[in-house]
Image (cartoon, rainbow, N blue to C red):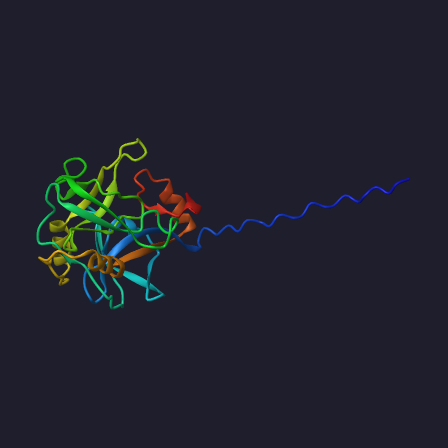
Length: 247
């Protein structure tokens, strides 16, 4: 009789590593930008809301950002870290004008595409936001999840708005992107006794704009517990840009 070959036992599959519900993990991302040389930053409230900690990278080192103030109604937040940025943004003296050219900078879709900063160009298409919100404006410059909290600037490099939301992407509606007007931003910053620099009058060339955008725009990470993530994902009004592992 021929010896029957021994049946090989199936290899044990490595168990999936599942974080405990109380483990704090980097879960979502957003954008922000420096507004002073002493490390004050602006972003959206929804980017940092509920986060157990907020981090960003400065000169290759992970740094914790502290929340100084929030404005849930206008979706703004001020952060502070013990860093000295190479550059910071000036805030425009004037709100954006209809048909004005604008540039949005930030980290759309987090680092899933690449860790390099991204920009998009467009123009101001309406001086009111969704539902006739006149503290916002509308632009056709591309804006995706992860752009939230990033600067919207004019050709002088002055911030005319803060990227806040897009509308109707799932329904196939394009170019309905919104920003918070600089007048609203200035009121919020001033009310928290933070001195900022108002806008320049000179246009910047592409090299100058590139240097400003690269050195003054920040990739923010929101750290949450697994239990937090499950709860927020189930909320109807969830605006967080969660990493794909959790979606």
